[in-house]
Amino acid sequence: MASKTAYDIAAVSDPTTEPFWKACSEGRLVVQRCRACGRHQFYPRPYCLSCQGEVEWVEASGTGTIYALTTVRVPVQPELPPPYMVAIVELAEGPRLLTNILGGSAAIGQPVRLAWRRRDPLPPLPVFTAAG
Amino acid sequence: MTKRAFPPVYIAGVAETPLGKVTDHNEFSMVALAAREALAEAGMTLKDVDAVFTNYMGEEGSVQLGEYLGLRPRYAESSDLGGASFEFFVHHAMLAIAAGRCETALIGYASRQRSRRSRRRAVAADDQSLSAQFEAPFGIHFPIGHYALSAARHMHQYGTTLEHLAQVALTARLWAMKNPKAWSREPLTLDEIMISPMICDPLRKADCCLVTDGGGAIVVTSAARARDARKKAIRVIGAGESQCQWQVAQCPDLTVTPGAISGREAFGMAGIKPADVDVLQPYDNFTHAVILYLEDLGFCKKGEGGPFVAEGHLKPGGKLPSMTSGGGLSYNHPGALGILLLIEAVRQLRGEAGSRQVPDAAIGVAHGTGGLAFSTASTIILARD
Image 1 (cartoon, rainbow over the protein chains, first blue to last red):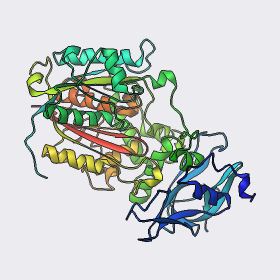
Image 2: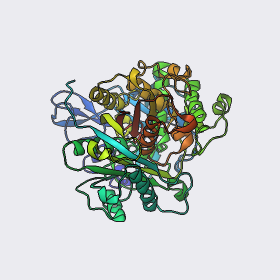
Image 3: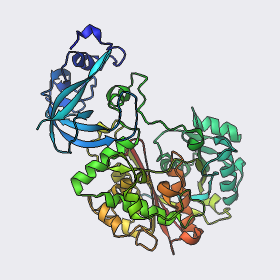
Image 4: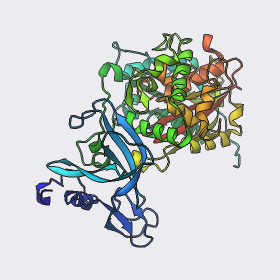
């Protein structure tokens, strides 16, 4: 992966989310963890929504399961020719995120692992593939 | 829930704007026409209006609509709960009238989304908003993709089938065939629905609502003023609202809508049970939506909405006639359907719904949703005195 200075992080981030997109540019998926109660959360907020404690960034294991899944069969945006899969993945740490599933087929409940989709000069996107 | 004494509030007039494909009006003139007709039903004129409610009529919508109609209201609202806004406007108008902050509220809305071809498919990606950062890059179809994720999860969790979804579309069409104002009135079979092209699995084209021009106006007023009405005024006996996520991945359970809360609030206020309802107007933007509402409003148990629809209860002659105008699926969907649900509910309770009239309908429910995969909900329960 290219050096992080090659990516235009400012174009896709705000001050609260910048650490997430910086990590993506280094090929790391990070989520917030509460220093007080230990709960993980995503997308980023300035504090823990559960106990209002301070949060820190931790690297996610990159494994999860598919919570919901659809195959988009009409064109939505030029860089994604249909059909392609859009899913909500529940990370092993707990939080869920919207993502793509790469590969030909997948199902709700299936284990998945982290992959990356490049979109230079924007930071790469965390996407997933079937974990077998 | 403790029931409080509450001054009765009525819907005294309803009217649709021009519907379908509207080329001889703008959105404001459409609302103006409907407002005059709804006020005439109430035995009123624009001079009687002292509160204005609208959504999607531009920036500071109530101001723009108020100016267009020459109104100087003492209560106004143009807050946005998506397509359910018009149900919660009835809720808020009811509270304001009961509190003496206004007496006659005009709720209005019109859209020319079909003529303008203004619908987009992508989540806006041209800013640094949270949706632009965490939804748009993955190409989710706006809003069919969001709703498809909830449908897929409901099917996975409860065994809801594609045929259950198709039965909702079929039911809407059976009703639309009885409504001269419906956009889609030609006969439709289950087989034809089941070969409709997939847009975002499991939602086919036939599972998605129409894209039409349309809108309406509703007059909400006090019991004292409702006595002037030329047509039978219909009492608001229950109201509730709630909301959940904007970004679909933030929803804790995609099989449950905020209707579970708005319905509980509305039925609690009305002091009735779902079994007491004679006619239901659910916000059928997508077929599976109706299945989820049936469960969340308590017409059946969680997970049993699909079989409940397949048993035919929602069809003409069924025990819970629903989508009696033909709904968003076959009658009209002007971007925000909620106002048309209320209009049909009132007409059913007045007994003026023609060949689609539900016999002896005395209690009706209009249940709205809005946003992306059930972001919002608002439930209004109406009764004929």
